[in-house]
Amino acid sequence: VKKVQVRIYVASGVCAAIAGVIIASELTSANPTAGTS
Image (cartoon, rainbow, N blue to C red; front, side, top):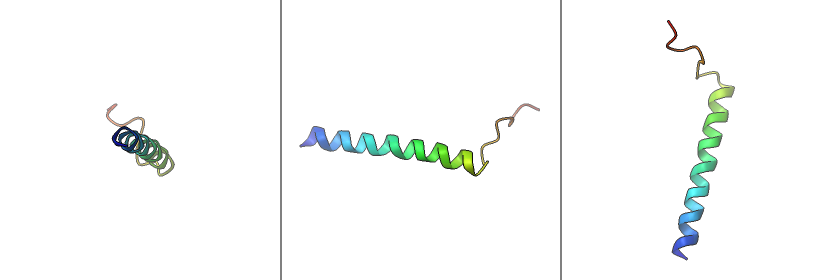
């Protein structure tokens, strides 16, 4: 049970990270040219 629970938490974290990257790219809050000047 403990191993399954840890795997579920890891999978949830990975999904949340992917969703965060997608939302940041859609909101254009991450500028790819930041810090070039």
